[in-house]
Length: 231
Ligand code: ADP
Ligand code: MG
Image 1 (tube, rainbow, N blue to C red):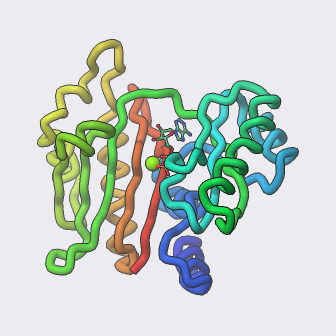
Image 2: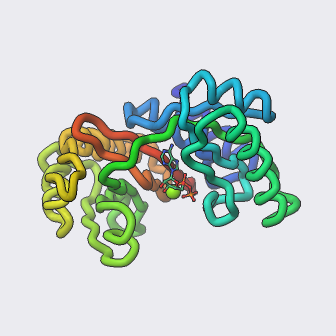
């Protein structure tokens, strides 16, 4: 059985529909979708050990089956520069989460490589009752949230269709570089769209998937946050 199938089975067994970020990113890795390096810490000392190994600056994030939008509860801290910052950050996240929901189950705190900021894009899927697995693409932040500048295709998509998706959003010119931002590696985005298409075609039990944001660089890309919801 594949790692992805095992993760989905374990999630169902626990009566969950949302994958933890660690699980969603493990699925991404199996499908060659690039993600930020991460390690799950169970205590403060481990968090420091992992941060030292990953290299500063790091990001800390809450991992809890009861928290879907991590930053809404003060569960994400970015740009921690040293061991002292990680120690303080670890305790601050725990405090924030407990204040939000005393009963929230806590799996641990994710120590993560900090992806340098760059052009942000979003790749998503939604299982449409009529059309089945459908792929979405857009630029991150206001482009998706305010301007709804997104494009859809029914999966599976070919490389040509993936390229078309990217070029048909209104914000496309921004991917070619603006205000000191590097031109984005379009091929890297095409690859992620193809991998995501393959993933949902092989796993029709995925109801929704959200890679948001993906930082795209001159060369390569990195998924910073991944959500997968099962049926
Ligand atoms: P959520 O969407 O659950 O609130 P995210 O994991 O998306 O949490 O984190 C919130 C924001 O923090 C992201 O949109 C991104 O701007 C930033 N961020 C999170 N992880 C990283 C990372 N590894 N590197 C750089 N920025 C990050
Ligand atoms: Mg997010």
